[in-house]
Image (cartoon, rainbow, N blue to C red):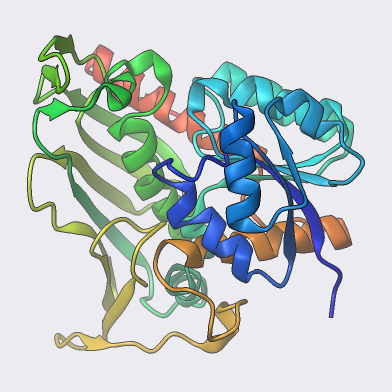
Length: 365
């Protein structure tokens, strides 16, 4: 069995929203990565995480953790405004780095981090987990093999429940577009990256961004908070291969139906669905009709699953798939996972969507 990679996680608070339901269960079940160290901003919460997840070391200063000789790789699973400084420190310490998406608050931060990782010769991975979905990997293989013939059109929708207008104070920072976390960067970012993965890059885009809920109420104080981050994204565009694509992603107050990707080709149709979003939640389902009009369920081959049958399903699964690829990159030097360069190209696409919305014109990439 290959050796486990000694790993330190920054953002290990047991009470946070994402890591306890995804990264920690994935790490606990991983045959590839060993959670050696945890780090939070307070000694007490760091120790709580160390005990809860069986780590050897606990830190309350990420600069101290990334310098530790006990670890060889670092995970950055914290709020996006802190991604840049923590990731930069890990690279400077010569550690391989797994940073959640978005890589930075903006493209400039992402470009700098990608360059630093290349110059340092460390392996980088960004949390674009949809690329490790067995369903989407199989869709890509089928498309590359000509299963649908020439593809004409991709139609994608992603509607997630945003909840009521009243939010806790701890969630208000996402209302500010400059913080880098909002439906455009996160929800649309993951959805459009799933499309980029299976279909290739965009040649041009035309985007419309809007804010349907212009203010939120802070639950504890009922203070009104202005929203500057878009909550509805509509994009149409032309892909490098010649196909057209249309995407609508939105945070809706209630009962968001999730993700749907429809692919129409000369020889058939494929439909991928997920009740949440392509990078997380339940396994995405695939139905197809080839040279006919009746969709039928398609079984996903086992070769796209890198994890044992007992590995936890749901949010940990695609994260676990990505940890497997990260560890393999560190062991072999060949990185087949989404890297910081992948992140930069996605940041640039989001910039083009913003520019198109602001100018009212199509933008070439």
